[in-house]
Image 1 (tube, one colour):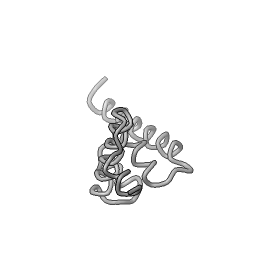
Image 2 (image 1 turned 30 degrees about the horizontal axis):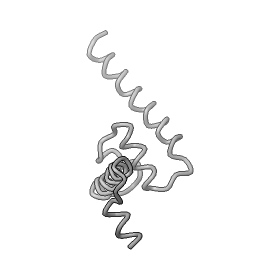
Image 3 (image 1 turned 60 degrees about the vertical axis):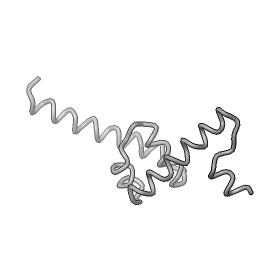
Length: 86
């Protein structure tokens, strides 16, 4: 496989990944979409483009999600949970 064929294959795979992601995101709110895409390993700039938001919002939502997961495994409420449920 030469470089041109390899690059074409990569482009097709990227398109396929985006189509699969779009199907997974159907009927999900923006935060759920961000978390799903983040769990798929898509970078924050690409996620921001896909869900039509800023990279800063993506980073914030992913950070909140990680905090919640960490608190679930440790049994301690996250800062976000504390703010929402004083």
